[in-house]
Image 1 (cartoon, helix red, strand yellow):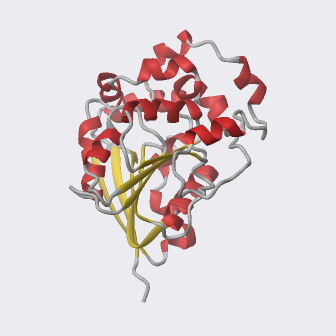
Image 2 (cartoon, rainbow, N blue to C red; image 1 turned 30 degrees about the vertical axis):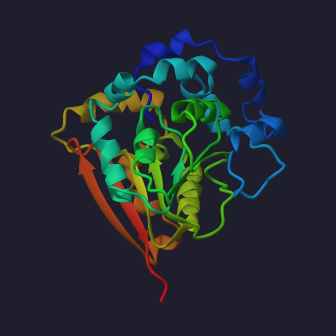
Length: 275
């Protein structure tokens, strides 16, 4: 999720552990914590802990990694304000692509502040299942509290660029406001992994920022906000998500719609059925 209100950055002192770990490949969590975050026995066990990416520690520590971040940003009204009142609409657009009821397996790539996951869970049929991955343990613990013991949900400590799931194992994958927070090479790997784990005929749903129309006044408001707080987000103003698809998007269909004067986009990539 975007984190536009700059006034919050000064209130969060940077934890020493993040300064020590920035840019390193060493893990920040042990095997014990990794095991406590992964509730699904269906996931292939990996003994190596998952390191926090350097870009996340350096750029977004104050929004997603600091212990106080969750207390500040996990407010529905604030999440809605950050998206200029569009959170519920964008949330429902993504969920409606998955379906009014969900009988199959869905993967959510990265936790989301606000009630996105709770609303997704409400649509699960008895045969449905949701898995959520995130690279930040504090975000996974927060999600587990929000879900309050809901069943048929796996919470996994994984990096979006290296998903530990089998090929073609999900009916749908949803990536809600994650791509704009990642450097271009990481973004391309995330997209490739999402498409790898979705079944033929299944779809990957992306919702994120987009270049606004010239007549949209938010075009000029968002430039200083994004360049200051979201240094990778302007990539999505310069390029279409389809340009990061693996193999040039062959054997896939892409549908794109924009909203709020072009500031936001929904892109649905469907893997074609095998002949």
